[in-house]
Image 1 (cartoon, rainbow, N blue to C red):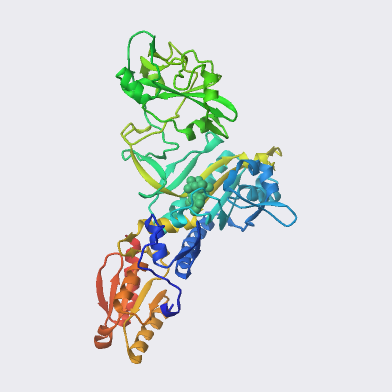
Image 2: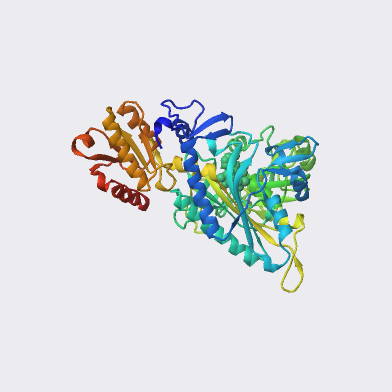
Length: 569
Ligand code: ATP
Ligand code: MG
């Protein structure tokens, strides 16, 4: 491709709205162009890279036995009503009407569409398993589109859905996808960390996210370097401290006028926060639920919601708190609490001689002993694990890292197949509901994540497999004869099967070199004075900065060697 006729609008300045490297560099290298907030156009070089990621995704999905389809992006409201998600999806789903007032959604995901497709084509266990996928545009009205194509309103996703007759089958389909994902990200040059993730209200089902460690990631991961345990903070467990001793004294009521927060209480009682029991009232699917955790911890609402199996969970308003506890906000506690449902974090039982609200305005209890002064009816992991907490598997301290989620695999079970009435006959002729798995990769986000992991202060450093071109040929010649000689080198490289971007523009070498560094193709070749004088071409490897000279007859071979070497690293 001749750069003089190519759309590659590189720019020196960083775009003002770019907070992260991939966004900044994709704009500066002329790969994408912002059309509006959360909407980007892919320009030719950006599209070439995107197509390479897409091709890798497709190859590995096909290899794993999944079948590619293409569903309409316009999805009928009837489909979403069947599963109940027309109501529950909320404002993230773009909804529109046609001229006859029929309602549609611009697909944010396609569980319903694929479930309906599979329902229409399977009738017996012999028709299963099937795994169907597509690579197409998804639409989500994100509250805060940001970071370029990492969180946009319109993005490309690979979404796959597996259907199996039993749990063994689902486990197998899921494992196949997990290995396909590893291969995909590996081939893209991405280092990912698979982490355990929240599986929502599906209770017990497995769910894994593929994270790219990055300071700009929106997810927090807990990682145990000792045994390899890793989980999203939404899900990460940890070992509670044993036998936390507070006041050993008998239960006593203490007047604590207007002292409500844990900080104020810790100062008043001169105690560590971990001996307090924080009691918070929630409303889960319309019912009040009380949660009790130790005072040094924050409740993790995702964990609580998942434990309760609730679709909706929010903190109760003051009025509800007062009616559940019989006291003003700030004085709730588990002793003499009449709430129908109280969930205790595992840490609560460890505190002996705790301090907690007395369910009486301006009073707390001290010397509270779980088991003696209140019954632990329901116990669960409902607080957030933090840096330094002990690994739930090996007990060693864990660290936290930020991560970008590039993929997510999930055992859905019967959620959609049941609500959408999918049945097949099993080998005894009995109707059974197939089990489903769903598997997503953010293709455009993956491309951005590759750039997050592969760049320096000068620009991009493409891993070979997803580089828009193999070679950046910089021509530095003025006379017609020199230009013709460079053209010959270009043509020879092309006929050798290499993908070449040829900078034939009438610009200074400095500008051309800066653009080559910015675009970051694996190999740069300079064809200039030393070629015209000594017949030698200069090679520069973008990743290492290493330079060497070669004769034209071995150029293509040398480039292939270099590229193969880069891939092996
Ligand atoms: P997030 O928590 O980041 O919003 P999600 O859990 O909503 O992601 P899924 O519904 O599992 O994402 O979608 C599958 C994949 O699609 C994600 O792993 C991610 O790579 C990608 N993705 C999701 N939302 C966006 C977006 N707004 N822009 C770009 N890619 C996205
Ligand atoms: Mg989302």
